[in-house]
Image (cartoon, rainbow, N blue to C red):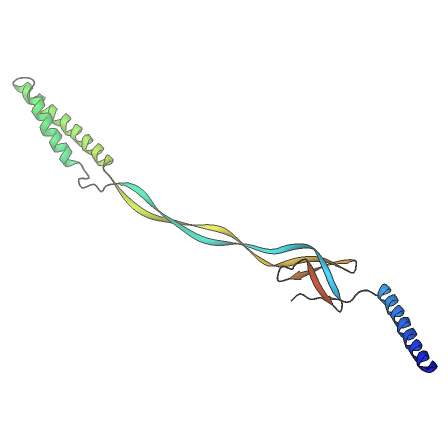
Length: 176
């Protein structure tokens, strides 16, 4: 019985010494596994500009095409009206001069009246006008993650946003 007690006491003593030695080792050796605390997460953002065409319909006003470019119609009508009015004045050869003068002045006035009418004669059409604008685009390419493990701070790049802690195995952060 003494020998069984001695063996048991030896085993317990050996386990106790090994446990104390392992505890001392853990106290002085850096941790290799466990969880790191995430202290900061910054998105890595890629930015660029992308062209885009913008079109709109616009009302455009232009002078209508002129059919009587030399305004002959206005001159002729003005000359006839001016001649008729001029014929109302004077007598004898003066009547002929008044008629001729009225025809000349009426022709000039009719020409100018037709010119003004032609200038005010416009057409409105709708035209499509386009131009290129630059749109600002961005996308998150990953995350710059700062963490603390075993009292030391470090930073890594991760594809996905982490939670509050990261798994550490054999001194390496597990990112997947």
